[in-house]
Image (tube, rainbow over all chains, first blue to last red; front, side):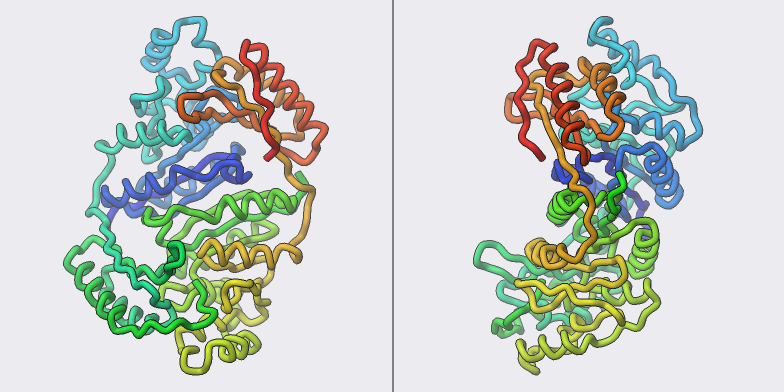
Length: 250
Length: 250
């Protein structure tokens, strides 16, 4: 695919500790696919400056776009913003329009030193406004820095989206084979994949209650090819005699 | 922390496409914490051989243990096993005991070429048996290769666990401040963090229905220090004229 590439950096000890179930990856992944951005890698890293700086610098060089989530609040463990400044070699300084806006809305007393951190950004950063939180995320270069709280992250992403580069939307087609086992259709699937080089054909065992089988997913940008591949996968599934094999893995 | 370090590599286009919500990270993260393994990084990468090989080699050098999930089934997109062999520079060959076991259980006809792939491993690999699937995962060096299907991955992890190195269990203590805003307690929290260098103090806004506030999480291996830090955080919250809810461990 010649679509722009992107990566996500989830900055957050709470995912690594298992305290919190990630709720941001799937949202960004789906929006990226719709916009024609090829999501190439996701990393979850801890709130450690050297790790944040190195990861941001590695991925912004490797991919067209980087989205980060987490670590832009007012507390001591919110260190993403100053680390992004360090990664870009820029001063970390008050963003005056954001400072003025937040102070006006919160009042001078509430807008204490901790909250003023949220109006502090790498020089040259462009705020990402959102309808939920007064404190914006920001973009600098090809890095887009968003909150970790899902509803705020989502609002920021929606605000950011119109300014992002665009590729050909990545589309998925799926066919489910109830009672079909991967090992029985593997050779047929491989042949289908071989005849459609422009698409990714994936095979995923599933179980829903007592029912199980395999989901065949075709992913790509060429709808005609996707539909043709899925038609072949459907025929492959229809040709199966459903006879359970003991010990078939997922 | 002097605990052993570990990383997770999620190999799967289905997470990157947004088709599937990850269901493996939190399970491994929690078990790792209980075993005293410091989960230092998670990566989600696509089913591309060069990416798998490079990521495995980078992370197995950087961390004490690496867990991979996904890509060990019988279909053409299941390429993890041969990529691990390539990463270790080992031949990828039939593991005879596994081959014999699978063939005996499935019967020679069902145990076709595709399913035989699941009995093929890097030379020197040790199978990770599990109660759900006949096809094992495997360990080679410090890399532990498991299925992507959550219930199979979990069974493999449980089978593997007793053989893993052990550290001091990582414990969490939490206190919730209903109605408390992060920006109001940030300075106080920072002071608490400064006086407990051995623990990680995290601050996480939360909302449950109409109710919201902040969760203060203390994480570390020294229970006395955790309890002391949480007592101070509770006092900080109480000083906000809000009644704290003593949090459940973990």
